[in-house]
Length: 484
Image (cartoon, rainbow, N blue to C red; front, side, top):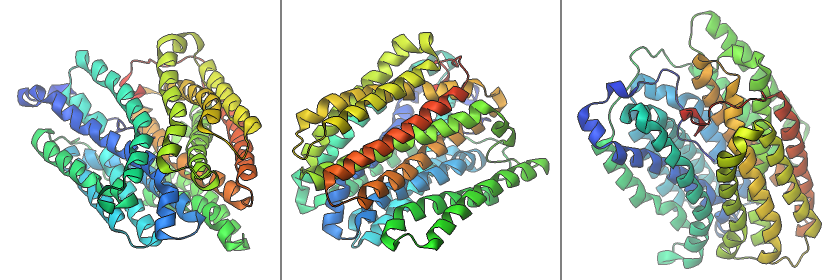
């Protein structure tokens, strides 16, 4: 799951927009929003396609993990600097580079001849996506006056919800239809015409903008935190394949040490007058730290569970891609419903308790699935538990980001939201690594392995529930642009 709104706090406002820009504002809005939808669809479709890709290209079980984890890991690392690149070099220029690179890497993914090539191109695709996506908020604030900005942001959630529901179905259909005999390659090659249209529209309708006072980018900090993230995910994904030698655990320890080094470097860099990737004082706030831990647990559980469920359906139960996509549809639909219900009727009344309620409902759905799981599962038997799980996810996600930002000062909002978005993506990579390793490490009987994985999901949800107590009870404004 990706947001398209992150940017630095020094974002120009509508006052800088010309009359010509204003006249095409909704077209430009559609171009930027389409980029976010394209990224989301690509993530969802690849999750459905992972077993088919492995069957076609070969490779071990870790290939299915890396197709998702490599992309989200690259996305999380790149998002940290993506918004700043737009501030420094111009948002339109950076958006075009990101969209062009994303489209090119999609084509190369579709032409890959072995698993290693595909994973590398997926990582590069994630990096270009991270360059493209964070430019959204800067464009939106320049395109719309304050009276229209709320309307524009209000359209993002429903459209992303439609993409969340439709993505798996589109992926399943493409794989089952085997268009032009392309098989799984069609899920990547379809981005070529879509990306070409988006590039043409972006060149024609997006305004150029930058922040004249933007400082130099902190490449050293970005390198440290990216390496730290890789050293945490790589050992977990590959450990089982290598037999868990001592050096695997050494890499994990080194990754943790590098995260500590990143914190020290950011404080030192700030003290010397530099502009940090993350404002160091944020980590002194319990709400900020608790929100990161809660987000890490919740998003890790969600993304990891989604991938393992898809693998279990296709590899363990022998479902085809379209049947698997339709089986998980109730969860995606219920998640969208949960988001709407929470925002309309529950947010004002419950505040932080909405996160707790969401985690409890999600846990109830996972528990129901674990207790009713049998080797002869049908799509209808999955539906009740996935509906409950989806509603809970919608409740929890609707509240987490805004309440997390409630304790953040206005000048810290850009750094805090950017960090949270990056952590969201890193959590997805880590969740895929951890839950995928649990599942593949216990293979022998797929249903038993999947049930054990569900208990691991439960542990992650318990961590998210506990971390939510660190968040402030009061919510921030639900109408804030940063809430979308």
